[in-house]
Length: 215
Image (cartoon, rainbow, N blue to C red; front, side, top):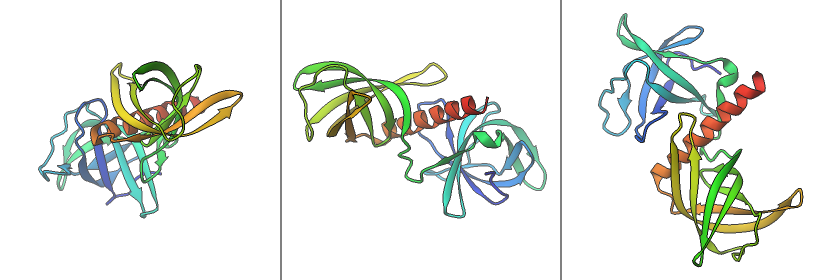
């Protein structure tokens, strides 16, 4: 799905500690290019000047029914009737359909440290979303369903950065998959910045998975 002329895009820096979001409108489009008006900060409403080469995550809603996201790069500026910024547009198979609430669950190994009543254990999760994770229990644990645990989640990004998310979580259930015990947990008290890191990580892993599938 490609955004049409007039579509509102939300842009976010791909590899930055900034949690800024920008809004812009598609004013022209070609096969592998999008031309947008100058974006504005979603909070301050001030015009944002994007540097050439900046890596961004773009998302948009189609007919209020489905949301889509893709990775893009600022290619330059041009001026016709109005000043415009040129963005790259990827192959159609690299455009992801996303859940509107953004709690997309991605199956990918993630290192997680768990603390419960002074005991520390290291595990690997089999999937993660902004709302929770499923932890593979390769060792016995002393927590049970309904217990609150402290987590440190390691998120390795493609550019080499690693973000560590610390959050409390509620153990919701224990279950088995291929004779392996797994604990599902829901994140609690996760701040907005950390949630955005998880969303960004899930989006990046989805893109990597999609690229492998089409290679």
